[in-house]
Image (tube, rainbow, N blue to C red; front, side, top):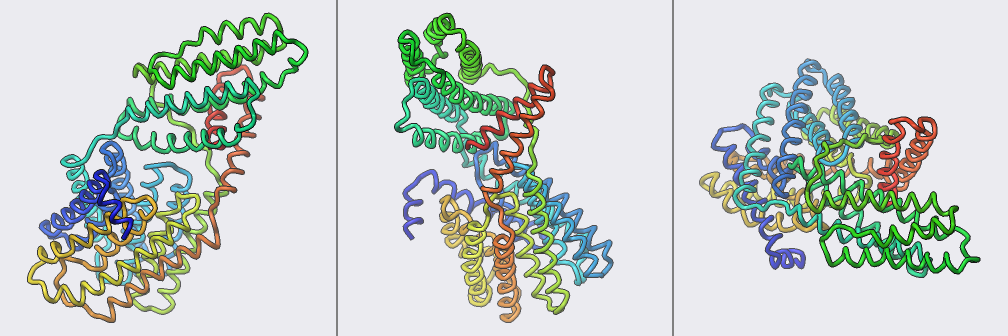
Length: 542
């Protein structure tokens, strides 16, 4: 209740909740008018796309569309090739889900989302058509149409009522993070160590937050993508500078008062650059830093290599910031070569295959129709969260939202539907319920509870279907669907994905890049390996 009240007082969150509600109900209404067989799946598609900034919405919609088309094709082929054999279909589905889970785990952002949607769509088609008279090809085509309707509804609402992403805010936040980094570099040169650990931790948290939000803000814009590469490069070089600054201080300068004085001057010069950057948007003025560092190199040639590294990195940082500030970066959008965590990919694929096989074998063994919803629930949420390092908390939220949705849907089918004269009235009556769940979905802490409620309520309540419902069938289907979510959660606990293992993978990748640089030193490949090494170090630090 407190979450709902807090969201109602937040105009931006309130706007997003209203758009989510409007998009999902518009999608279901449009699909009903188009006489699609299961129009509530269009609402589900609109809810999955959500209402992010427009550029991200376009990219997410495209990823969902491509994933749905490929998943629908795979699902129709699996059922058709199986030719009525549940065991063959289940084996094919398990292999396909394993592939989708592995790809989703390997990729990032919208590419991972598209792979997850691909697997999700295949599970829906196989679980709901296998062993029935439903034509899998026609059903797959209908799911593609539902998705298109849902995406169009979500984009249409966003174009009418949404706001553009404020990419300038990313540049402003980047400037703030740079100022903080320069201050830390000055502290490292000056030997200020009392609060360095806490401040560096705060700095890395700021980097992590900005890196995550910058990817979303850059969506849908080629120029923003180029800025995103420049921002990530800046972050990697700032981390390099902190290390170089510590190396400068670690040199034995205790015997020379001149060097101690110049180190203090270098610290103050860098600190002045940081303070100026914090209050100004002008280019970095590094002349004082150049002058002091030159004097240090003249007096102590032993410091020259590390000081030259510092000067080179500072010059690159200044140039990169100037590109961001003036928006004159004309380089091509670069794609960072992924470093697949093959242990994690194998784990995700194994989990997906096992969850599918266990649920499917239960269904085949007992030959009870509602058990198809066990496969549906476990398959959807196992593949959907395969791209997250630690998805267990999210799946717990999904289960809570699913329980609430199942109760509300049962009440709707048994008490509300028999009393309403038409589908439009049913939709109108459900609007406050959908809106309240959207309010819950807007809050990051309860996102999956609200999302699960609206998605599962749309599918289970079937708001525009006024046909009579069997109490026994409704309850059995809902129990099996919730059991599928619980099964998915169990597999995430038995075969967990955790950040410690991901961190060890990054360390291993760093060692491999260092080895590659030493082998290919002096070639153009060495620079590529160095760029990837910087990105890995940045990822590891974050």
